[in-house]
Image (tube, rainbow, N blue to C red; front, top):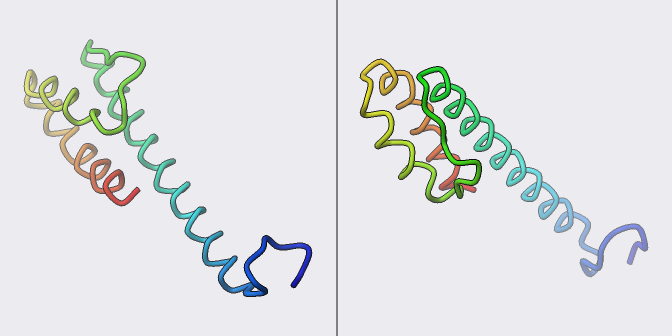
Length: 91
C-alpha cells in the first residue's frame, strides 16, 4: 500500500474515482451558486432583494413568486432558475 494515498486497499483507481466525484460535486455547487447570484443581480436591477440567507433548497420557492410581478423579469429569469434547479438536483 502506498503511503501517499488514503487507505483504499491499494486500489489507486478507486481513490481517483472518489476524487473525481468530489471535484464534480464541487463544480456543481459552484455553478449553482453562480446562477443564484445572477438571479439576485437581476432582481436587484428590478428593485427587489432577497434575504441574505436563502437556503439552496428553498431558493426557487422564494424567487418564483417574486418574478411573477414583471413579465420581462420572468422571461429573463425562468431559464436561469430552471438551469439552477437541474444543477441543484444533481448536486
